[in-house]
Length: 286
Picture 1 (tube, rainbow, N blue to C red):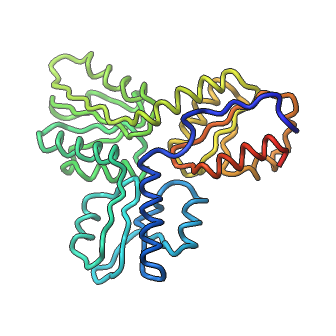
Picture 2: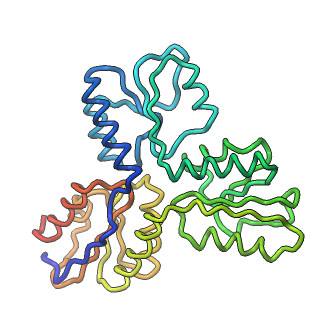
């Protein structure tokens, strides 16, 4: 089973936003053992970590009642501003673990909308980060598109256009949209780069590794948008790319890794111990 060579991405694994959210949640749970600690939506998009935190007493909720007590942690992806307002009006103790880069996106949307720009968010309209960011724009003055193919310039009202991006999308998806607008005369365009450098580095490095290996494993939650993006980028250059959550999935694939060159990378919400488990499993045949 042992591979000929294992190449591990330097940038694989948790980013500072996720790390801070998880360590803070652990501290709060230790201080408030057996007390009422909740997270607003899954704290991060990694089922294994969320599961461990739940065993330590963190429950995941999607709404807070007015008379709720205890402590609530706002997830790394952030929440819509109307839900934040509800939290402020309740009795509950709020700990905001929204990633600072997601905060930058929220502020950019608010700034553009307050200054009468029609806001375009390039990203996935079902992702909690985008749902949260969108709420910072005035009604009817915001639109989410996945990529340039979903863009119809004629349909966009006014001539002041602000463009931002979901923090984890590939860079070119954002800049392709910006470039299309730049070709249109008489528009006042303001593009704010809200992309995460850490994710971008992961994408570039993972792609380079995927080009050079026989098999590529991308470790991360199936519900993790940034992990899926990395896996898609790798798959484009190496069809033998597999997104897995744990080493067990590699075992289940029943692969012969003998004499193969294997690459390993991981998304921004994948903890070091999960990466280590996978590396140990691949090296020692499980």
